[in-house]
Each structure stands twice: as structure tokens, then as C-alpha cells.
Length: 241
Image (tube, rainbow, N blue to C red; front, side):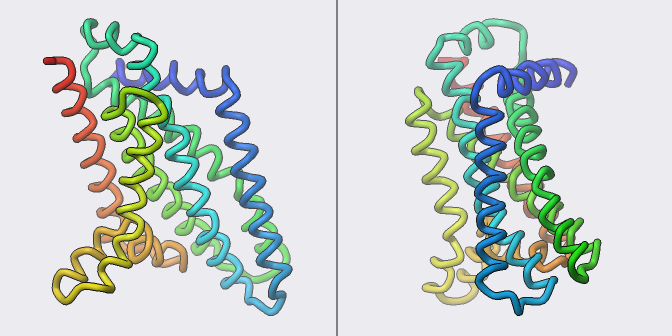
């Protein structure tokens, strides 16, 4: 685990030694702020709780996109530049590589997400909102971000270049985000199964409304674990090749 943390520390620093980290954080906060102001100006009759729910809904989209962008370079860039070969021939385990890359990307994503807290704070000052709603909403955003980050890591593990990684990760993410639409076109019990696999719709809605369901937490944890496990297996297969 110490090796994974060393990799995570190196990767985390690299995000801020390049343009990616600062630009992504600034861009995500800008979009969040614009959405927040637009929704408040559009209908000033919304209750504070409704404004907060809408904020988490809008921010979840930004979080998912940011997670994919952050993970583009994680493994695909290493493979493209040839440095992944050095990692593969070293005593570093594939598990440590994947976990380290994941922790670094998720760390930047978590900072980006938590920096948006000034918007719920504005609602808290000018209206009445439950602090629990804010906390649960951010827990949901972080869990959703972890799930999408694991998808991005998996897509980057499969890809031979960063552009291919973007395509693979985006397609996989789109499938799991839009499964609720597929569920509507199917019959029970298949529709319930597909709806339960949707990474955003049914599973994120309770968090968005300030309801902490253990089943939602378990879903996101298992979802993240499954894609990280798959990423490790992809690296192991490539190492043997």
C-alpha cells in the first residue's frame, strides 16, 4: 500500500505541475457557478431545499465530466510515452499502479468538488437548509466521482493513446449513466435490474435530496471496486503479453 501512496503522491503533484489541474478546477467551478446563478435567476420562487437539490443535480454532471478528463492521462499517457514499460518491468505491482493513479485523480476531483461548497453556503446564509442535506449531497458527489474515476482508469488501461482513452471511457460512462432510459423500455424484473445499475439516475437521486441510503453507498463502493479490479486485470494481462 505504501507503494500505491508513493505513486499517488507523484501523480497528484503532476496534475499541478501541468495546466490540467488548475484549469480543470477553475473550469469546473466556473460552470458550477454559472449553472447556480442561472437556476436562481430563472425562478426566484424556489425553496432553499429545492435550490440545493438542483445544485447537486447540476454539479453531478460537472463531476462526471471532470472525472473522465482527469483520468485520460493516467495509464494511456504512460503507455504512449513508454514509461509504463518501466513500471511493468519494475517490482511495482499492478494493483499499486492502479490504486495510486486512482487516488491521485480522485484527490484532485475531491478538491474540485469541495471547493464548490461556497454555493451551498450562500444558500445556507440566505435561506433555510438542513446541514445534513448539504453533507449527504457532497457524500453522494464524492461517491459518484469515485465511480466515474474508476471508469476512466479502466478506459485508460484499455487504451493505447489518450484519444482512444477518451472514447472508451466516455462510451462506458454514457452506457451506465443512460441505463435508466433502457430500463424504461424493458419489462420487470429486467427494468429494475438495469435501473439499479444506472450510475446516476436512481442511485444518485436520494443523495441529491439529502437522503443517505446505505444501499446507495454500497452500490458506489462496489461499482468503484469492480472497475478498479478490472483495470488491474487488464494491466496484468498486458504485462504477461
